[in-house]
Length: 85
Image 1 (cartoon, rainbow, N blue to C red):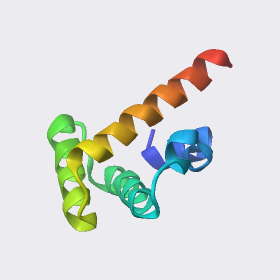
Image 2 (spheres, rainbow, N blue to C red):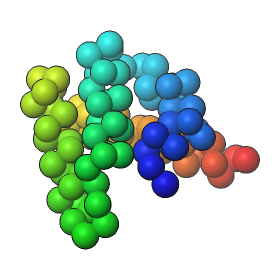
Image 3 (tube, rainbow, N blue to C red):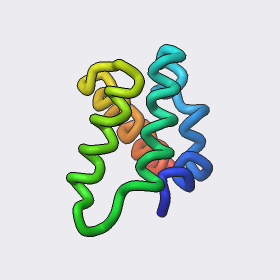
């Protein structure tokens, strides 16, 4: 499953975590999802994700911890919705 499928399936753009972000962080989050779709492969999964995160942080001039905090909030929110369904 691609991250773009997750966005469509779980409506990440409608999530509280996404909507609480600044416009700059929203752009970074969207860039991360797009990059994950095209870059992450099965062999070096963890390294690929790390590369995507670092690239997006550099491109958008944001701190890695802030992007990771958002990802954690998003995952928690989506898991909570999945469990409630």
